[in-house]
Image (tube, rainbow, N blue to C red; front, side):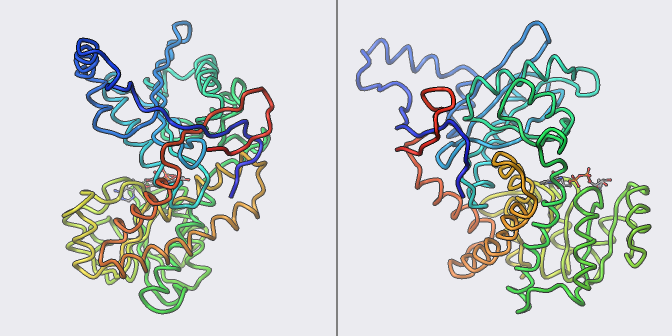
Length: 405
Ligand SMILES: NC(=O)c1ccc[n+]([C@@H]2O[C@H](COP(=O)([O-])OP(=O)(O)OC[C@H]3O[C@@H](n4cnc5c(N)ncnc54)[C@H](O)[C@@H]3O)[C@@H](O)[C@H]2O)c1
């Protein structure tokens, strides 16, 4: 899938100073400089660019990080959060932007990974002037970074950011945007769950299966609707009584469970975490009786990597659908917004999550690894195809975009 209307092209990447050409004393100075905290943090990552943004007039303090633009412009939302300082903000934006590279790569998008954080309390520090100042910094990256909503920023905020940059998505439909991304996120999770059902039970249907959903906010309640339409039995839990009541009013056939501990102890076929990160902690994994885990929440695995939660799930015979794979509907929506949003086209693109999930689960079986590791490998292979390139803006305003290595 190509991104149209972007004044972007690709040129060879230059990586840091060529130390072989530095004099002995210059090399020592360079080595000395890289010991400060920011460079030390960056030295542990493989990020392309970090922009620290400051606007004295509005009090804006933001960090924009581009992990990789190997496959296209970096895409990812803006988080507005009262970080303790630059170091905390930097650590978070590096982690989040890297995750976006994997999410866009495995979703098959021609996009890289980026993310931004604004330091401050969204309840008290967010002003229209500050958001417009932020938009100017996004614009200064000339399309290398495309922003969207994240924790602490909303559709109305992106409408304001879009006043000063062409690279803000997640705008309202009145402003040419696609609005709430949870519609396609829930649809994508449902696609992933159907693919997992086909993998485990031989048919891409949840009919007659018992699915437990933890969290019936924007994503969870829409997912419940898809599952009921597929004739699944749905049990939910949410500490927000109003969220449960709203779902029950719409779908009285939905059963409820008092909390996550009770829900995950039930005889479920599928467990679907749709609330907070870290949902798959050690106790939950040991308690689970479901054969499949597939949900919209980000960062579900309490411990990532070798020896972590995904391996324990595999040992227990539970098929885990990687969160960033199945919850990519939102980012697909955002990428579609750049082309002029069309819901049917975006829905068709989101349906691909079904095939991507099948591919990941098949690869995991073939290579005897966890689905999480298989998804990472697929994403890394795609990114490697664009290694040694970064995405650059065109040379002239309005230049027709070309891809060039
Ligand atoms: N909205 C999107 O487009 C989108 C896209 C990708 C990923 N996600 C992720 O999906 C998850 C849900 O997003 P959302 O937009 O529906 O958020 P939301 O805030 O609308 O809903 C989250 C719900 O989880 C409930 N909850 C909180 N703690 C809980 C607990 N311990 N047990 C059960 N329920 C609990 C909350 O009360 C709330 O109703 C988040 O992790 C989010 O990062 C969302």
